Image (cartoon, rainbow over all chains, first blue to last red; front, side, top):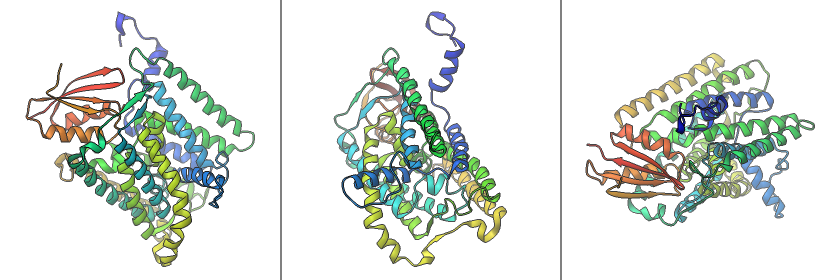
Length: 396
Length: 76
């Protein structure tokens, strides 16, 4: 590579550019997150995203005098810490690559972010899962409820894509109007961004390190959260896209990236569970099948309207998209309220057979269970590839 | 370079820029050029990939003050 003025790049500069000059392939992100997920399981439990955001909401509402769930203070609940550090990691990743800017969307988009977030909060609590706990970690945990939840996600996504096409054609004003962005960088501007990025990483590492004295679980959750945020931002890892693109552009790239991550995690999770390092039923949720399908559908619709699932919202918030800040606000508000006022009645009304924990190896053994998941993934792969070629289900 | 049609996607995040581009290009005659403004870093990867898959041509990408300008020619 020759820079202007035909001066050769230094070796360190070359290394820096490998990570931060252009986006990583999304499958690289999928694999790194898959490996990190195994690490999280070894440290404590698999990756989950909505639980952390719900804890922010519970704490906020309790602070205002409400009586909501108490899973611990924000700085002491592993998944809260993970989510915060994930935003920091994404923030740092965007800064290092000079992609950070506060991007204010048109008002209609901000509203869609908020509504999408509220629906995600509702769906995540009703369905006891989100795209991570009920899909990206739920499949590797060999939970059949996770497959049902994913079916719900696909249904919700499909409906939302129909809605978006309708909206862009009939109400184009909703996604246009006054916008602004601040602090953006370009080639010759914003050289402060990488320096601030270094400071953010340093602060993140100090936070992680400070936990080592008292709670090594939190230390690792903080460090892995920081890493996850950076990986998500650099690879633009997006589960919404994996499920949505077959119905939109037809691209199979995001779906394959998510499959890569699930496969890697499944390898580790099966070893961990089979060897009894951690309990069988971990990340097998009591949502088979009604809560999974209902919650999954609501969540799938919400995430597609918002343009990011829980994790997608967190890392894009770190990159400076104000629409996704609105989405997080929606989740923070909706989750505690749903858990307190809607979920109990919903679950009481269901017979036990409709809200089971369904750990597949319990019924058919580990070998066959892994086989079932591999076949499902192969069929999914063949579907997205066939659809990419033929455009049968794609909108454009 | 100048486009025949201007498409302002500033401030929008995924999937809105590509969705609007896809809808806008449908209304265009073959050979005409869309001049698209965007601020989402994702568009830098998505626009070329989308053009390649759909048989449209990305003529140029210009980095501007707060984002990018893409020039896309509608294919046959």
